[in-house]
Length: 334
Image (tube, rainbow, N blue to C red; front, side):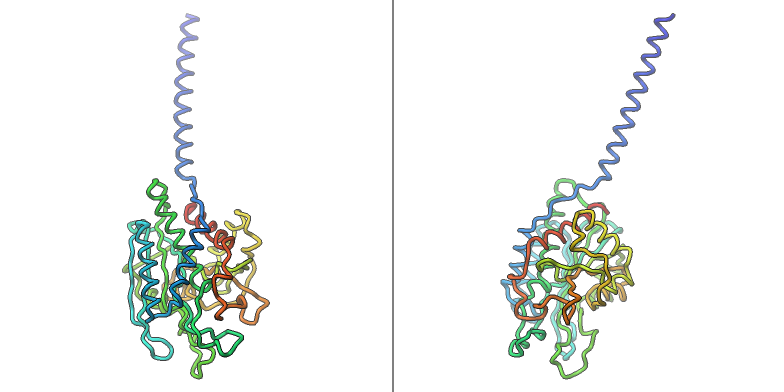
């Protein structure tokens, strides 16, 4: 009797151990499933994407360089396996010129209704109207930082998502990478007519009123603009804080977690008219702007902003890496 009781007890204990181990393994698996497997951002690859855009020359709507660069961007994004949408529109500029524009959208997990937007503008400024030399002010700029840097970071993020998706490591949320056109065709400072704020971000205004998917919704958006300069200073833009303060805090907190708090400073900067403003106002999607801000300068931006010196000489792989790391962690931890 005594032995039988011991055997029964042992069998019961064994059953409990096996059951608890199975439950523990299940919980561990659930944690693993939920844990983010964040890919490594490749700054060299992002840098090559930035450089490739500048090699086409200024990407001004209606120009050959603009057409060639669009084809380059679309071709590379197609290789990621994303669903590509080219949203073409004829947009009227401040001077009445019709701009043949194309917003480029790369959608990952398009069937997922739970989505976020990552965006930048891919065109460049037709005039160096902020150049210290007056003779240069009608010269188109290369826009290495102002335009190409944000696009380069997003092209690398798209490449990483494509690679990881093939491994079964897709994000848990739908991602729309939107590259807006005709952002930088705003009224130049030397123009004698009305300095119209609405003349900027024409591609974004069009998309916000005519989204690429009927009834399009997204949880939030993150805009990149001038993110490749040396020792960037990313502060809170006023409009980002007004419309999407929770997203600001989310992104800046992630940056601090990654050790980038000396670049991402939770301090209020200026009010910047950029693509995010129209995503907030017209599309009603909370959107923030990650943009290099210089409170000491007259313009609020880096000295080479809207000058002929916005070239690859100012692009820093470290800065591209910092921004890319933050965004990949946001995407894969969502």
